[in-house]
Image (cartoon, rainbow, N blue to C red; front, side):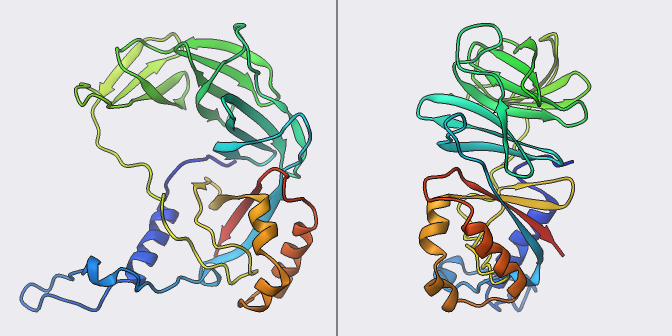
Length: 292
């Protein structure tokens, strides 16, 4: 149902809204071109209200137990029935599966040196139709599992003489790899290969996929939760963010609520109910944003 990616038309739309909310009314009289004085605008932003664009927020405090303690979250997939999370506990990689109603289902693979295990996960990719998860790992391997954690197969990543930092499933049996251009001498930064490890095509593209890093986010005047900037989006027109449990507990107090605007009292009460469901040291809370 939902494909996690780093950018979308929806996110680009919100970027444009924030961009134009802080532009000056300045125009070159001779050419008619709008000129944006970036230096002049530093610190002179207009806030963008979430209430204008968001119809509802769903909070998913992930179950916390000794089997699914999470450190840093690197990637996230939210589907109709499953939530898949890839991250790091110190130097140890993990991939966990949860249900949409917060419950921990189990680990996807595990740390080790056997054919079905990994010592480090570089990237997670999803085949939503077959309900497969692909983990690119050290040793130039892709390990394939079902969403229930069953090991399916190992796929060789083609040897191209450079570090491949991202592997993404495309369709059928095809994957696209991204080459990290560390030396500036790499001939191609993208290549397509199949599940036999054979390169089908190489391409050079100039892309900036990290469109949302460092953005200030939308002011959450809908339910008075934290401001958010969705880091992922779905094919079901939902945006996804991750909030740390301790930040929610420490910031979202009665004093904070009293000092901020609330446009949807019912949504605010749902948020307050969710806040009672977890502790400061629990796993992160997934926020699913539904656009109007």
